[in-house]
Every structure is written in structure tokens, then in C-alpha cells.
Image (cartoon, one colour):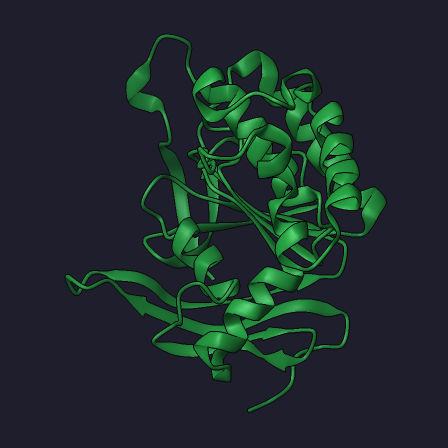
Amino acid sequence: MVAPPDNDVLWARALHYRYDDGSPGLSGVSLGVREGEILAVGGPRGSGKTTLLRCLSGLLPAKNGEVWFNSVPVHTMSPVARERLRRDRFGWIDPEPVLVPELNVWENAALPLMLRGTDRRRARTAALEWLERLDIGDKARRHHGELTQAERQRVCIARALAPAPSVLFADEPTAPLYRVDRGHVLRTLTTAARSHGITVVLATHDAQTAALADRTVSLLDGRRVRTVHLPPVAGAAETEGRAACSLSV
């Protein structure tokens, strides 16, 4: 077992994962993510992007391979240690917003901080700051049922950013948002990450979203590839996600 490079906050080698039905999720994926970097993981739906993020974050133990965070081997950690790592050092944004219905907006956004032991007043202040940045501060006392799907997702993004995680895993974070809102939210997310030194691993099948990252790696059928996408043709739905060529690396 060889330790990863010192400048990689996340490092994975030869990750393999198979789903319960036997189909491959990842087939030998290796990559490094530098501290403070925004890395986009691109590829069509079903290419393994979510599985990779889950393995890197310790949510899903890889069947074979290694995952390191700050030179600590995540793949050898106990389930309890991995859960503590995710709570204290990682943030996560799902493509579908999930809020605690009994809590109002600011309490949902402050929840990770309070779980870490931050007092209620400080947690509320941090949560409100991010809710304001994401243009949802006026709904701070509303509840889940009073929000649109897009508003709920903004709350989830604020919840992920409020604790200032070392690494933020964002799985299609703007999927529920209207296209007109996506640019603003993504710029807020990436600007915040850079100003706070947060490393971001962003899964997306959208080229415009990937363009905001410092670097992009592409997956296809669970493998890293070099992919050249055909430009979209207006009105031709059949061209969506089609690739001109894919070369394994």
C-alpha cells in the first residue's frame, strides 16, 4: 500500500464496485483531487458518477481499491469512523432535495453544525448567511411543504456549505433548479468553495456546469475515458449525450 501524493486531499486507486445484481458500477477508476480544487466528474447518466462520489466519500465501500483523505486510508476505516469523517469533514448535495419536515428552513440549514456541537445561535447565524447568498433567506422560517422543489434544493446547498466542509460532494446539485437559476446557484457554490478553500467533487452530465470546474474527468460504463462530445443540435433530442468517440485511459 503506497501513500498518495501530499498535495492530493483525495486520492483513489483502482476502484472497483459491483451492484447487487452483478452489474459493474466502477471498473478500475483512479484519480487524485488537489486541495481547494473543483473537480467535475462528467459522463452520461448511468456512467458511474454517483457511485464514484459515494465511494470517495466513504458512503459506499469499494469492493476493491483504495481511497485516501489527507493521507488517511478511508478504505480501512470502520463504518463508525467513516460516518464520523462524513459528519465532521465532508458535505453532500443530492440531486433531489431532502429536508427534515419537522424543522424550518434555517434549522434544516443549521442541522449539520448543531450535530457537530455548535451552539444554536452560531449555527443559526451561519445558516442564515448561506440562505441569504442563495436568495432563500426570506423563507428562513418556512417549512418543507411551503417551498417549491427549487427552493428546497437551495436550502440543501446552504446546509452543505454552512459547516465549511473540507470536501463537498455535489451530485447533480442543480438538477431540480430551473435553467435560469442554475448559473447563479453554481456561481455561488464555486465562488464560496474557492473563497473558503473547500475542495469540490461535482458530478454532472451538463457541459456548462462542468465548465465552471478547474478540471474534468469523464466516466463511461464505470471507466475513466477521454470523451469528445458532439455539439448539441437544436431540436434533435436524439443527439443528447451522444459521444463522437471514447478512448479508455
